[in-house]
Length: 205
Image 1: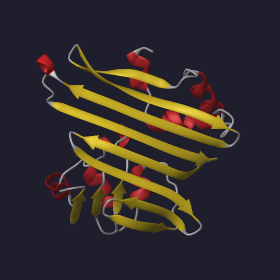
Image 2: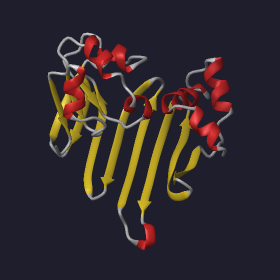
Image 3: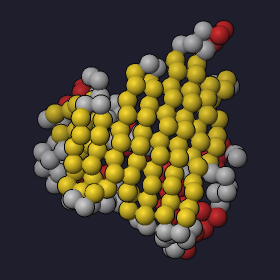
Image 4: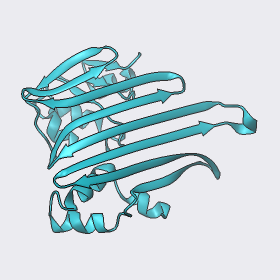
C-alpha cells in the first residue's frame, strides 16, 4: 500500500468506512471501504530512511458486528543496541454503531499498561491496573469537542491521531470543569495547565 493513501485516512474514517461495508450503509462510507484492501491496513514505520517497525489494522465483519484489531511494533536499535521499544495490541468490537468492548495492552519501552472495557446495561465498564470504574450513561459524539461540551472530566483512552492533535484551549472552553485523565500519556501537566485545565492525570505519572 502506498504511504500517501495511508496518511490520507484517519482511524475514525477507516472505522466509519468499515462499518459502511454492510453495517452502516451510507454511500460515502461504502465508497471509502471499497478503497481499503480486504486484508486491512498494513504499513511500515520509518525513522528517516530506516525501517523501525510496523502498524497493522485488520477488520473482520460478521453481519452487523465488526471486530477491529490493531498491532504496533517499534524497535529502534542502531548498531544492534536497543534504544527504544514499543509494542501495542488493541482489540475493538462493535455492534452496529455501538462499541461493545475493547482491550488495549501496551509496552512502552518497559512500561506496561492495559485498559479493558465492555458495555453494560448501565453504561461502560472500564478496568486498568489502577482499578475499575463504571462510566454511566455513555453517549456517542462526532468529535472530541462535542463530547467535551459541558463535561466535568475528559478521559483519553486511545492514541489515535485525532486525539494527539487536540486544541486543548478549545477543549477546555467547552467543558464545565476542565479536568483530564490521559490514559495514553499523550499530553502532560504543563501543557494542560497552560491550556487552562484545572487538573491533569497521566498514567504512571
